[in-house]
Length: 237
Image 1 (spheres, rainbow, N blue to C red):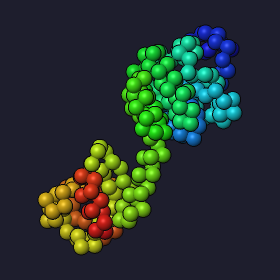
Image 2 (tube, rainbow, N blue to C red):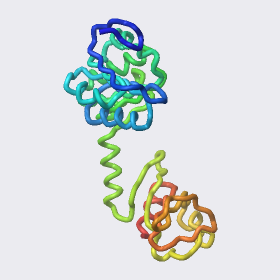
Image 3 (cartoon, rainbow, N blue to C red):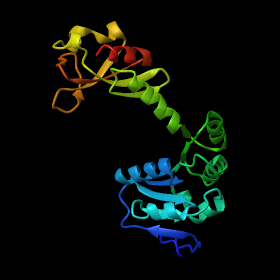
Image 4 (cartoon, rainbow, N blue to C red):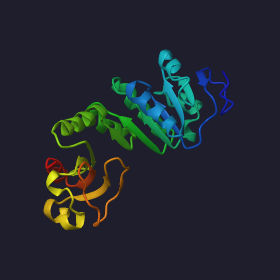
């Protein structure tokens, strides 16, 4: 079948669905639970997505979701070049269970000159290998989600996101003892080592916090600071 984008006849199974959305072209390899979810969300965000998976059933599953879907073996740089991946600046390798395929695919993408490669890893050793063969960003979905859920289960925290090692954003309710007071009066940075980034008054949307912002009962805060200090503050609520 001829490739409509490059004009090549590569013999690979390709399904194209509808007009391409505006935005950057992104390649997603591996359409399992992780890769498929990433690819579908990228389309929702108006990116043009080419999905690649060797499994025909997955290709069919995403044929009406993604911009382009290809059934192919992405561990081969020759196959990737036939698909024109040199035109893509960003790629996500969502392969997790088959570590060999994950590593070979990442290496092949790097050899093809893809500028930014995100890759899923299942272990730290797997992650180190991915970095060595060309991955620019390595993610550990299961580990990261387990870590996040543990923090949420701890109580007082509505949401939690670690920005960097030992620095987090924490979403929490206004502590009862602080209700009716302004941020300027409370001096949270000096007392607790955290900064209120934004606030969501009851029934309203999030807005920037200022020293004049009064903490109403039932308001939601997003605070930033060293992880332990941010969590300790959340436990006050």
